[in-house]
Image 1 (cartoon, rainbow, N blue to C red):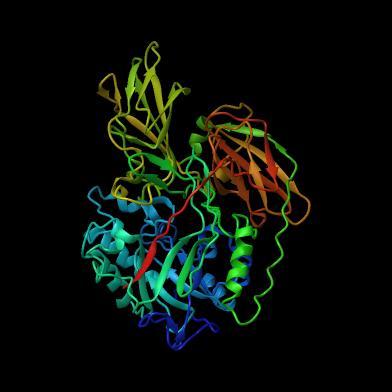
Image 2 (cartoon, rainbow, N blue to C red):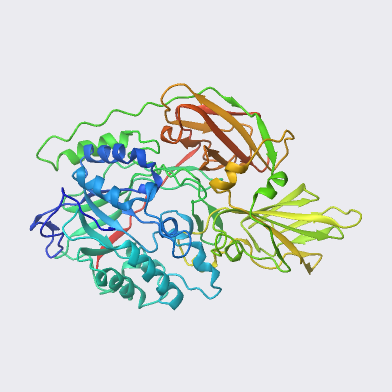
Length: 578
């Protein structure tokens, strides 16, 4: 996309679906696809992961495109470095891989708000994934920037939206997105992905007809190689013994899951809100750190039967190291860090994160927000479920409990005179799938009551913990929680991948050299954070743990991850052509 000029893997006639088998260049073609998201893999490792894909016998790379990273602030676009989609697609072409692009605008992907930018929610009437004018205008501007590529490159098909039949709020919407792509010059085969029920939705072009006819090729757009994990649950595994039936094109989701670095994980909500973990290992054929698993070997044996030539050799595994533990050298309490944040915002009423006047008036997307006000008594604090998603509650900066989607009430201790009530609210991840998308504003989203009277007169601090803020943190010797804890890892040789473990710690996030690796939470199942060697340097590396609950005195490293208790899963959604 973005002015694509690719020398290799170019073609005269694209993917066609006019017969029981796909054709490419007029010849029968079986899509042996796999998903690897460029935004979940450090750029330095793109080549390694794609070489391993090629060596497994796959012929097609599929990837989503996350709008919320490419346009984090309205009208400001980023297609550089880690987000250089053009470079990623070109690299696939150099490797001899075709590409199926899934640009959304909604991608699901267990990614915050399904990849939609949170600033869309500043409009209180916003209707995401519909032909609501505010959404239409934003999509048009984004697609103007995203889509500008020459024909004949490695991209053989483009997915229109994603799983819309399961959402189905506007019968004109799919036609609008299809037109967005075609009017900007996309002539490639268009398809979409959904479950059985979703594909029968009337708003699909030709919906309600039987897609699965002998005259059309069949493709499983997401052949799930595993499943994702949520905090406080088991690690999901998937024993894929039987992968391919002749003649059915597939896309392995995921071939390599990677990591939802930073605060980018999504959440489920089918009646109960459950945020997803940082790791997106997905029990995929290539593990989170790029290891070839047993599943990889089984698939390689299988896919080799579809190639007349022997498959390329599998690249040798990347070396990893369990570095020696590092000791915490300094701490900075959350309260002492507040002067390093943007100027606090004063408001009579509570204001949700997205509507705070920060980040060039794009609001706050991710992280934590601190709300402080004064109270004159103790008594019953009731959130009325207006805390999204979890708050630590402080009286005069001493923690007195927490509130979340299950716990709405807390008793505040009595005391003399005016005291400061603080609510440190964490956005644990916006829901990425289902009907609740429009309702994903975070922070405090309505009145919180003390003894049946709404709290008023707030001072609000935005703690999105962006790199600039992390760089400003400095040494203070009084450990206190919540707070920032720094250690230094000295690496005397080329840095290697490793896994950070935090035994004895509670909940928070970990930053290495300013990069947010993701969230840690003792309830599991995830008990590690993947630290790519590519994000470290020879010499001194700074590790900062933001901790909410309980700190230990060191950070530990391991060569291998520990996924905790496991559980089996089995499901399959299909794709259809538009």
